[in-house]
Image (cartoon, rainbow, N blue to C red; front, top):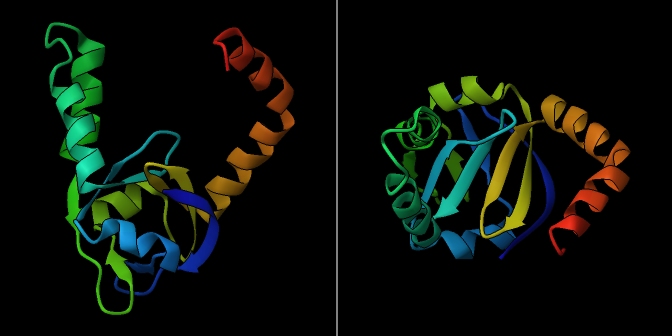
Length: 143
């Protein structure tokens, strides 16, 4: 289970340390891909397989389905964790998420996200400001 917010620095080679609490859950492998809101999604391999099966079952005849499947699957890359607990984020994914030096890793239960510090701070500020509205909409969904 991935929880919490952690700040790290991306090194010159595009490597970033993972929170020590996350590393055990990734021993079976991990996948990184383009996320939504200009961040990266990281899934343990088991969770990724479940999501990938759902994605490939979306209707090919719907353009939104094709676009989303392309976004998620074409951007996916296997990750390996080095002895220092770091992963190498591919260039194209660093560019997509605007990762420069300061990054934030946030745990979201079955996955975690990697954000540029700047993008995360902007997103979080807006979300915190609108939290009452968001909560009301979730209430309508029974949450």
